[in-house]
Length: 406
Image (cartoon, rainbow, N blue to C red; front, side):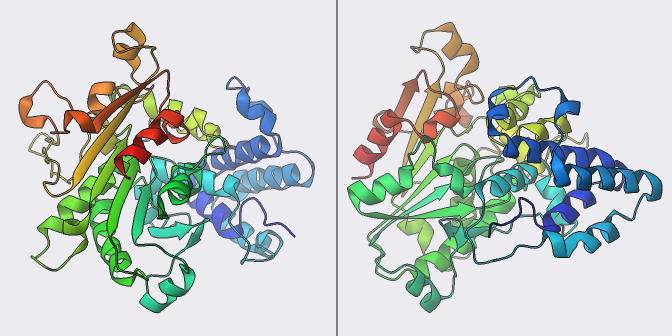
């Protein structure tokens, strides 16, 4: 028996996103379901939204939800509760379905701060995972789950609107490759990317200490690899860890390496123009219909615009000043940028970067010297004819990782 695409709690959570647009959100979820049922449509970005309708019994269910909510409004919670037995998972021990994980991760990226504030069941709780299953942070339980763990630990952090399963792209996973070639044990962070980077950084700082304390063998090398927003979250965790009372957290001083892949250290201008997240969602399988949410912007997205890793209270005019945070002194820090162009001087490289993040931003460069990040020249790299998501499957990127982390 397979899990249903969306569990009862998932649908209930989607309806609770806004009581004023239940019918619209039902259509949104139905569009996702239609794309998953017909993966060939993922390749097309020009689908007419009204045509994205699920068929068969599933389509009847969606049509019924829309009809009932038009007539009786706020009874969607009761309706979904009545449907719960039919929608419940038959075997909760089954591994998570990549389709569902992708949809929930995209929702969290766009609306995650709202989901968390309203205690919505769709809100992702930060956890370390392997193969999509959370790792227990209690010492003996962690040791039993990580049989064969090595002294080399690689913590991988995904980007905005993504999840830990999406480190596998084009049949490649940087973490698995490092395990095969260099003996690392990869651990994947799963988090709500719609929360502010600073909030995720504070939570991660404490979670990293639990991982460090409970690791089955003495750690000889600890590295973090962050893709896109994941690099900002890693830097934020290091920053918050250093602020905590001296000797309270051990892991920040023992982090050997931090590698950032396409991280918008100086922000993402395309996102500031209002198009970046829409493009990202359109490129992610199963999540493209979420681009319909238009200009909705979570706290995490706002941080991505400017590269913020700490929360800054607004001034009297309601604006947020950017607070520069330098790279950690005791950790080797690396930056890899991607460019859609064939060379650094190409117009496409200068204007588009990797399609979301400019090359200069990914390398920590800024016209204001006080905002520049001091990546050593031999700890920087640019890969050409590569998009933002392609950093996850690039052979050239992995060759750099293998060289730096040997």
